[in-house]
Length: 499
Image 1 (cartoon, helix red, strand yellow):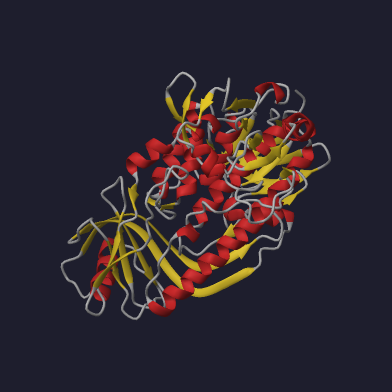
Image 2 (cartoon, helix red, strand yellow):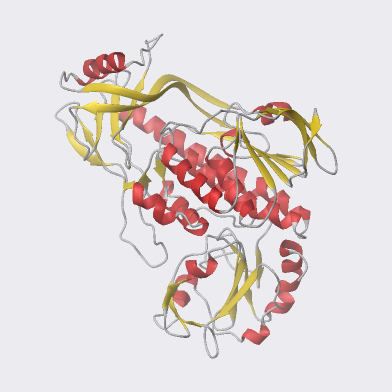
């Protein structure tokens, strides 16, 4: 057994949450190792819904356009039971300046992960496949992990460990963290298949009595369909092309539909679970290791992505001089979000089971989620609950112009691993002293931004002299009226580290 180098963070699991965390650390020059027990990347479509807030996250990572190039807007659902009808699964509002991505997308998980892997490689990161976590211990200075992989068995010493190792998380098991929840006793299958006899302009559903339903959804960016079906009363499903063809034809009552190839398949049981804790000392649970969702509403992958997006900048901050108490806010902020998304997914599942229909909308898009009254919010003076944007809210986008005349958006200013301080009709000389990882912009006389259409003032509800501090993950950290130096110097020292 050899003693390996000492990364700052050891990430166990290279799914969506592990890849996203690695990207966030790589963007901030934090040393990490990303290991994955499987010898190859995940090949399936399992989590295929991408919510608008996740596309905003991908934009910050430099990925939105390459994701959207392969994804597609949610397509209509074509129901064939009874007299048949077509239904839009999602309500699509008109676009507005504050929300550039106004609808959910469909994209198979293996393409989402491929885009994340590509971005990670661009940032100089790599994945160690076939490398397995065996055990770990921790103390006040770090974590010692036993690994087994292509280089044999080794001990790795890291300051922090991130368990991104899925619903059967070994990290969670070693920590002995409870994982309570509900099993719905609905066995089901999911498979990525080639199909003859169906169009690709809709999500095809034969709901029947629901226990013998079958759904076939075209997978954007591929020639495949995702097949989903409950397996109640089917003790040993046949995942061969012939077996899935027989199941599909029996449940659809259509002999012209044929499964010609199966690229990936899995049997699973629907459940909803939430870890009792998301952190134990220097070890963190992220994604499916911390919460498991039924697929209704498309919340699981998106919540996992945003766990990593929340934790990444905080780990980097703690490692680069910020107060390590910053890490306490990960569980305080993300566990209530995960609990709420679980409740929503379960509610949608029960509606679907009772009526055979399900409509998503604003509640599933994750644009209204935030951290009001959380541990990182600062308001000077305090705002009333109905006073528009608050500390902890998502920082909206807004079109504006640079002082040189070029059009731009606030999201362009927020993009990157830094914090952003925005002063509205404010004197830049009143801002806190410049420091690493902070960028300052002002509108008004002598400012570098021009709010000539009034979008910033309207969307943010700002008055002359107001300051908004936006966190690296696009949420409002502080709202200040008056002297920003007196209000923010201590806050910045704690959360960004020394100037």
